[in-house]
Length: 186
Image (cartoon, rainbow, N blue to C red; front, side):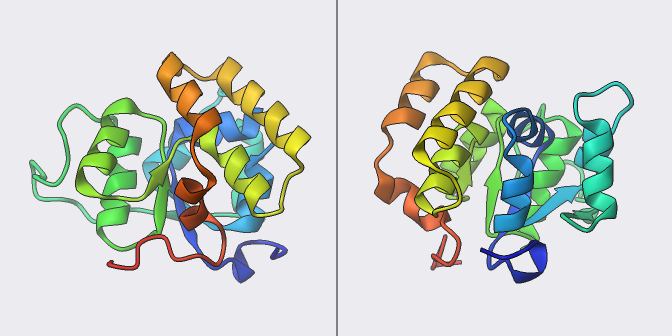
């Protein structure tokens, strides 16, 4: 594993909810050491808002260069590539992917995740990240299970999402491992 984003092979675009859930579970630092992490400026503003959980940590991680912050280009309004009703962070994360700024997205918003699924954008929710990190050798099975429990407790997941995260075949998660192609057709 790399000692930070400089050696990472894949770029993960992360939305605010996912970043906060990963931080709550003690995994955000591991994610930034495993992938090149990029946040939209609107996401960064959300995770560093005064009073939000982890705001000072996210600010420090950014200053330390553990992740990058990018502002997507202004889309023509309305942007037909995106569903309506998204918050700025989810919208900008999707726009960054459409602009070629990432290999995959970590996103927990249902509407944004459905867009990813329907348009073939490779994505994970935060609840799947402990399994991916375990499969990549970054976490023990026990640490991954505890992190998944913390994410489940803090997140707002439907029962079927929790069940899927527990039961998804390793082959479904393999493309998100560092060094594996995520979307060869892109």
